Image (cartoon, rainbow, N blue to C red):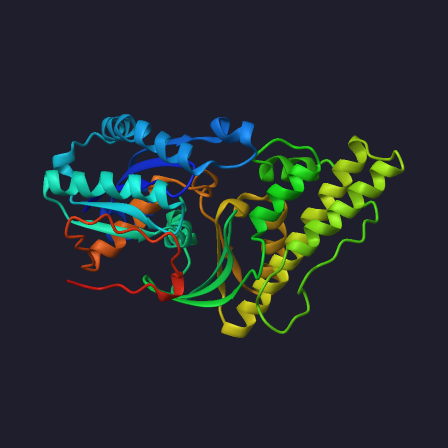
Length: 357
């Protein structure tokens, strides 16, 4: 089965063509990626310090057809070779989602092929199954840590389409805390990746930053207080003329240590609670080097294994949507829009169900 994936949930326009034959043959799922194209709007939104929804939607409109043509050429396919179309149905920015939905619906009607709406987080959650080495993919059921700019959740994955929410952030997502802290330290938008890189040059300078909810008896997270603690340290340093490059690097190091401590300990607690041996980490923050090292070390000491998507698939992309949509289409899932562009700007992943035809 060959499926086109379309991702337009926020500020990346991603398209990909995925072939399920390697997956069905028990080979590396990564081999099924026939072609992919991605455009990021980072440069366009930098002047505003964040994503401007209307600009994001308009840019998706401009990019979709050129990226589709590029993806099809790379994959060696035509639209007639497609067996289905998958698109991000939600969650995300409503306008951006509508662009992708309208495009996917129109194309599906034009070529008379099945259409499937994919949950954005399901795409992230299943992306570690695309690891180059098929022997390293997790077995169901497994635990998933979703960490991105908009979400921080621990999910129990019983099977494709069956997810149980174990815990989530009660305020800021981890990625959001990264971006806001980066702004406090004078880093350009989007600052999460820059903050991680800056932290690698820092050292333990004795900053006493909190680990919110580290010892709570649940699996929820909180990061807004940590961001406030960083603000207090910055103001203190600025008032004492100690705000310099070394201070910024050391504070970034302390911040990343605090966030990764919380994420790692909560993930280990979830593994123990659910008696799982496999942990999947997905989302943009999943590319963070410090988090990967800490999670891998803690899991290994417990006889568990951590699975990560390829680095290029950590951020939003069309491959994860094509892959997730293809797996669901293989199970007989599809949707009927009746001409309506059905999107879900807010969508609880644990409420997702697969409906077979």
